[in-house]
Image 1: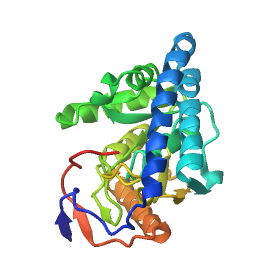
Image 2: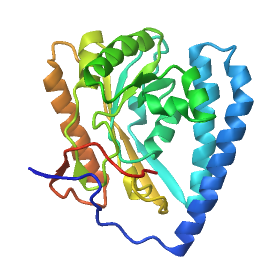
Image 3: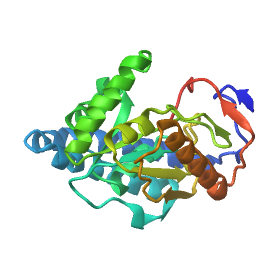
Image 4: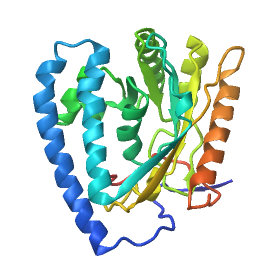
Length: 274
C-alpha cells in the first residue's frame, strides 16, 4: 500500500475559461442564497422542533444551492438505490459516506432527510451558515481531541437517532482527492453496533466535478449510489467497518472515470478546500 500527501494532485481534465466564469457566478449565487436564506429562515426555525428545523434550515437551502449548481455550472446528479432510503420517521440510521468534496454535504440532506452530520466545531463560527447549523444540532467535534470527539459522536449520535434523526458520518474524516483512498475510522460503525441502528453506505464520484482543492467546478454528471441497509446485529465494529469500506471503494471504482491510483492518504487534507 502506497501512502501519499492529500495535497497531491490527481489526473483531471483542465478547466476551461467558461468553467471559471460559471464557477464565479455560482459562488455569487451561493453567497446570496446563504445570506438571504439563513437570515430569512432563522426566525421561523427558532419556533420549530428539530425535525422541522432540519427542513427549514438545511434541506430547502441545499436544494436552492443545487439548483444553482445545475443551471450555472452544468453539474447534474444521477441516483442509484433510492429504494434503500429509510422511510421510518421514528427510527434513525447511521449513514456512512464517501467524502470527496463539499457537494455531498449539500446533496445528502436533500436525499436522506432529516439527518445531522458529524462536523468540525469551526463551522459553527461561520456567519449565517454557522448560525443555522447550530439550530439543527449537528454533532460538533474537536478533531484535535480524538478521544473526546468519539464520546461526543456516541452520546449525541444516539440522542439524535432516538428522536428519529439520521446521523451522517464521513469515515475518511476529510475530503479525499479522486483516485485516492483513506482508511476508514471506526466511529460510525461503532455508533451503529452500540445502538443497533442500520447502516446505509453511500458512494459517489463528486470530486470529478467539484474538486476538493480547486475552486473551479467542472460540468458533468455525479453518480450517487445508496447501498442496502446493513444490520449491525451480532457484528463486531471492525467487521462492519471493513464491510462498509470495501463496498464503498468498490462502488466508487465502478462509477468513477478516474481509476484508483493505489495511493492511500495518510494525513488530514490540508490547504484551501472548496
